Image (cartoon, rainbow, N blue to C red; front, side, top):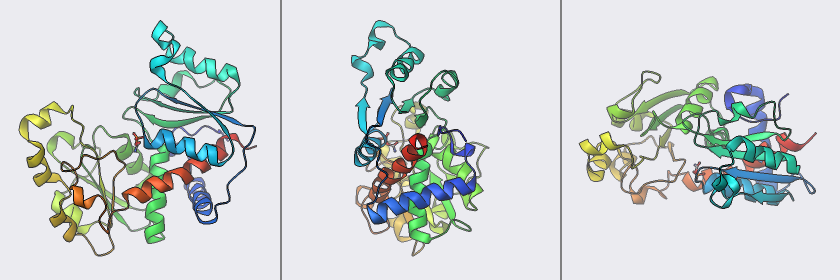
Length: 291
Ligand code: CP
């Protein structure tokens, strides 16, 4: 079995379920694997707050030594390539590398050339496996199952690695997944629904961040107009199913895709997702480094 975690589509349902059970165990008991003597290296070539620092907290809680990396002050300034930079840390003898990079499947050029197991912290518009694991854990805590649940993913779906990863794994776990949003974000890859219908009929409403650089969108809408047409407003929350929950991978734009007062409303599990991020990342690191 490969110890890399690159895409959830590489893992069977059984293994995904057992990683979720393990993360839940860590959360409930506070009993974590002891990984003293192991060194983790977090290489984030693209900005991150949640993923980068929840890996860091998870690694520290398991007793690991953590090496962080700042591309801006590294020898990449002298022209060192991505490949050669990763090879440096592998040569230094780290036990696991967590990498985020803006290129889809950045890891392809590394496979077979590095010794340390690799955990994908997000690649371009490709995959974000640990984000999906924490989304799944949050859903499982709420409903105790996946089968038969309806999930709507609303917003910048076309360019989202979170949407891509979740769409694949959630359907494999027996959930119905629909998307909603303006035409710029829809793609024939995914079935779409009217935003009000999607919100009113789903068990899980997952909002996605609207990126400021989507210029064609902003030629058609002001932020206020977007919010009114597609945002999760308090009025739309009132029409959600009684037990439905709100997820957002964050960072979120208050007043654009989600109303500020909705971020911490009763149905929101956004900060619980962040809590769960630490425990699923413990499971991902343990899987990578333990014999
Ligand atoms: N959800 C997520 O990946 O957040 P960061 O970009 O802050 O890591």
